[in-house]
Length: 273
Image (cartoon, rainbow, N blue to C red):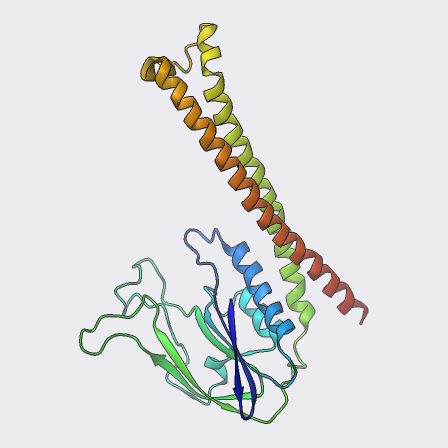
């Protein structure tokens, strides 16, 4: 996530840009995307000051109705320009469209996963698609269609939606993060077991053959020297994969734990208020 501050005569304009994890197969990364969306909301909330103009844009890889987008809108106090614009090209804007863009997979359902969000002291007067393809060649710039918004800075102080209940968003996020933490820990143990089994099989293959166990006659295929070299390669590869997996999983698990602890604290505070 990147951010820049523009020193405007009307006040500071803080712009955030991000690209959340894509959904490559069967919603396998939904947990990570939700965690990232929550982290984005907290980054915006903790780095902006009262009176600043805030714009958040990028490829969120979320549908509008998903919990991650609700988290960003509610917890960061920003509005979707597609709905706040007074003039719109369409009420159903699509930025990933297989029907008009040849770069989009035929399996993709047309949808919008790109957003321009803004604080309540910014008025969105117009929005629509832009930069879809090169006028002369007709070539598309990306698999995503760009879109634009025209904004006006107002003198109103940003104010959160009084009708919005943060608990209604924080509680389901906390529930999903708990499940994500459990899944990450389970997957970690399964992968560790897999690496250990592969490691043990190749290390112990000479012992199998020493006692007449021909269940894995690797020396028949590779020869004694080849088998020895293969064992070294497999041991090094498994050890490397084991260490990488251990480090990556530790980072992922710690991220879930930190978010969960933070969410539990926020929920407890809001319940007491």
